[in-house]
Every structure is written in C-alpha cells, then in structure tokens.
Amino acid sequence: MCGSTFLLRKGMMSMSDEAYMMLAIAEAKKAELMDEVPIGCILVKDHEVIASAFNERETSQQAIAHAEILAIKKANEVLGTWRLEDCTLYVTLEPCPMCAGAILLSRVARVVFGAYDKKGGCLGSCMNMYETKGFNHYPEVSGGVLEKECGALLTDFFKKKRDSKKAAAQTNTTE
Image (cartoon, rainbow, N blue to C red; front, top):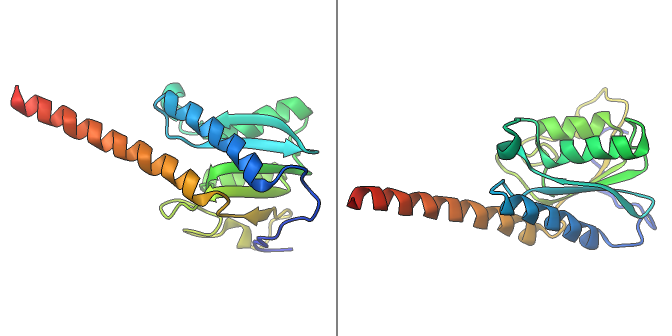
C-alpha cells in the first residue's frame, strides 16, 4: 500500500503512544543536558523498548548522528538483523529525509512522532516521503503525539540559545 495511512493498529501496544512518547522525551532531555538539540527516539518491539537514543551531532561532529539513526543502529545490534519489522519507532520530532529513508529501509512497521517540523519534516510537513510510489515497504505513521510537549522542548532550547548569544554580545559591547 502506498502513502501515509496515519492509522493506529488496534491492540498493538500495552502502553499508550503517549507513554512511549514520554520515554522519547526523556531521551530528548538527555540531549539537552549535553547542549545537543533535544530530540529523542525509542524503538519498541513486542511491548518492550529495545533501543533508545538522542541527537549527538554536536558531540560526535557527525551529520548523521540523529536520534533515529542511532536508535535504529542500536536496535539492529540488539535484534541481530537490519530488518526492524514489527517495531514501532517513537521520535519527538518529525523525521528529516535521511531519517525517514532509514526508517523505510530498515522496515520499521510504524512511526509515531511528536512535533511537526515545518523546515525539514518528511512525513507530512515539507513533503511525505511515504507517498512516493515504488518502495516495497510503507510504515504506518501517527503524527502529533504529545506535540505541544515535544515542540516546547525545541522552542525552549533555541530560545535559551538566542538569549545566551544576545547576553554574550551585550557583554562584548560593554567591555
């Protein structure tokens, strides 16, 4: 089936999407403590969290160190396979093109994201990668789960960054 379905599978989880998203938010908060953009991700299979990660681009100085990529890599190691069939990925921000592609190629069954990303989201905001015909796998997608909480993490983080930059600039001009 081609395209985004935005459907939920009945009886798939023992915990709610919101509860799992709270775990992804906890990962995002770990990123913030490291002065990384606060995006967190978990992967769930058979009601169990099998992998978790947060953004590490600044720490690692690797452009691909997005939360989703790191969580997928960990899940591959845990399961001993690149196929993440029957897994659900929870992430606090709508995936970018790279991450949406990695999710697709790793055969994740379902994606649940929090905040929409108007500047780079590829599951509905800027484009919908999963509406492109020809792929042999299309994950189900649910967006906007705890959207306000997830969005506030990012808004607050970047506001603090701007305020800090302004304060530093003012200190430099008064010296």
